[in-house]
Amino acid sequence: MNIIVIGSGFGGLTAAIRLQAQGHQVTVLEKRDKPGGRAYVYEQDGFTFDGGPTIITAPWLIHDLFELCGKKIEDYVKIIPIDPFYNIRFEDGSIFRYNADREQLLRQIRDFNAADEEGYLRFARAGEKIFKAGFELIDQPFTTFSSMAKVLPDLVRLQSQKSVASFVNQYIKDERLRQVFSFHPLLIGGNPFQSTSIYALIHTLEQRFGVWFAMGGTGALVRALVKLFEDLGGQIHLSREVSEIVINEQHKRAEGVRTRDGEFFPAHIVVSNADVAFTYMQLIPERFRQKNSDRKLKNMQYSMSLFVLYFGTDRKYENMAHHEILMGPRYKGLLDDIFKRKVLAKDFLLYLHRPTATDSSLAPAGHDAWYVLSPVPHLGSDTDWITTARPYRDSIVRYLEEHYMPELSKHIVTEHYIDPLHFRDELNSYLGSAFSIEPILTQSAWFRPHNISEDIANLYFTGAGTHPGAGLPGVISSGKIVVDMIGGTTSNQKMQSLTSASRGK
Image (cartoon, rainbow, N blue to C red; front, top):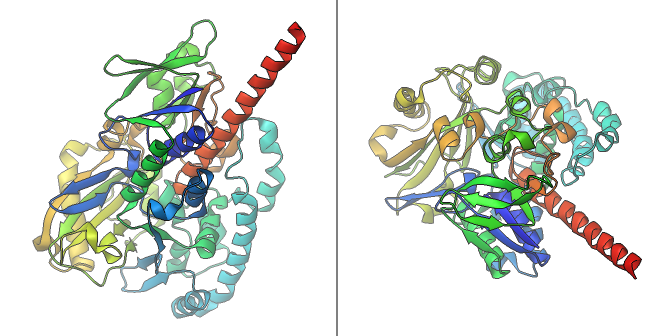
């Protein structure tokens, strides 16, 4: 079959590779001049900056793609484990070096608060149970309520109605340690005080399988997947923005897509790796969307946005690790500002990425490449980013300079930033959300936008806004889910054709 994939993020590339490997003819249409979606790569003044996801977990999901195609991953990209996974720094000067060394973790917990050692061990055991139940569902579709009903007893037993923070807090008392073991939902666009406790499984995932890095940056992984796809015979067209999914008026099925320049690409099946809300509200007339109306989509809760400053320094800050989580003076109050009150606060919770700690090739000799990411409200707030972005950038640099990176402003030799307007205008993300639909319990599994449209029978979805959600394991799994569903559909179609043929004899 002829299949069109809209967008070349990790979900779209996963689906495209698997579908092409099954023998379909797949064409990927990408709006931007490089593949990767949010995993875009910026190159300037000798520095290489990964635009988006930089934390690789569940590496077997990537290995599986190459094995499926009879290829060796090492012929395409090198993925290595890193240690520590993160340094988590607090303004009182304390640092938690987070990795999978159980004895080292326990020793640090005792240093923070000896009374929390036993609580952590109980938390870890509870997390194992959540992981066992939750991760088995990551590549299973939830397209009917009955599929959801089957797992409801497990969800109740695992306290999924609690947030990650409240789940962690019942075991751990030290405020800093509570932050150490509850911040993970922020990596997938969730508020630790609102995201279902199922996401506590991320801790177990990292403890079991580590945190990994693609040499050359995440962009090297994107390039490897694109090459794998093209080696299979797939086609990818860059700078081809889709402006419409063309629906047959009589059969209510997608006939193909039309690009911004007016070209029509016919398709038996369309897979959208674009933002779910954007796909429905901008690419499909509402008369074809009884289930996924504008009103329904606008009433959903969307994740926060991001302000990201990419910069290069002419000196190296060897005290900083590959991944740094910089906790500010507030935690819950700041997250309330971002997710609930939707106001831009003056304090920060920052993720600082220094890939040159692992791979010096990403910057000129003696230099460091960085990005610093600050969660901010999406465009449902009244922040004017045209006037706010530059002062906000200055305040972040000043904060880093005062707390962690002396004389930083003197050593920045190249930079650029993105803000919520970039997510809306360049990435076509509704409200400038950086992670699409917020991962709360009432927007998870069956309650999340489905991997197959209820309105258009041959339209499928991958990526952060559909099941299972954001983060590399989630979006890669969404691609597998879609391919499994299409495989079932095509098998049923073939069976029906054979049955019809036999009846005609």
